[in-house]
Length: 288
Image 1 (tube, helix red, strand yellow):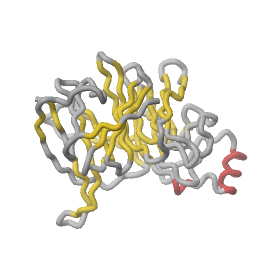
Image 2 (cartoon, helix red, strand yellow):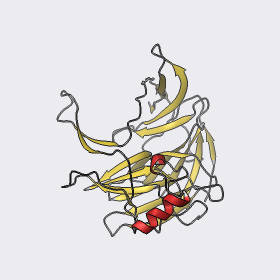
Image 3 (tube, rainbow, N blue to C red):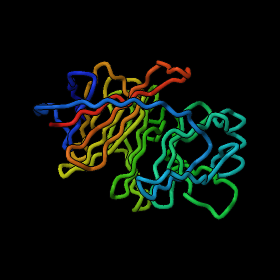
Image 4 (cartoon, rainbow, N blue to C red):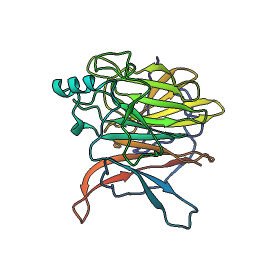
């Protein structure tokens, strides 16, 4: 694995359709657009489906599931009872983190607090039963390991499914294990591979994929860090891109168009007139 630092002048970042490698020249001309968005309060234990019939109509949300308390599909009640007793499972500590949808399955990463034995789970997009489904460890109980097992999924974070049905999963690792990147082939029996180990631990957050004629790239943010990482699947290499004065928390990529734009959201402790905290959608830079 090769890691290289590339500094971007100014607080914003340009990622074109083909990522700029360290030895490539920067774009000749850029222009900046700024937007600000008020953060929404997180809603836990509920999943909604958004239906958009056209840009001119209002968004309609349909509640699919609602839980009073989240629970796993355990191998046995004996295992669950033991986990409750020794503290490795605490239902009050389960908080959904990121979500991806493919076919009839929803994939969730869960915040990796103490009392959360599995951080990557799946559930169906619909159910004939009125009872909300339990969370099924994905791809299995065995691949989700305790913190400190460097060959298992320890702390799942950002998720995304690519155009050929592969689920990409960021894994923050642990105090003893480096952060990792996993891919599961959802079409071929959920075959799962550990494809990359990073040079650092902890604080993995968000991920977006850019599928280009020159290969597939993942753009990755770490919590509250003035930096993002770019990973090339074909080269199996990652490198860092500095974003001075912009501590990134979330990341998004525009729809396929020329040129493509990478949006960075930075967390701010500033408050508006209502006393609510705000997130700042701080960038886009585009090639001229």
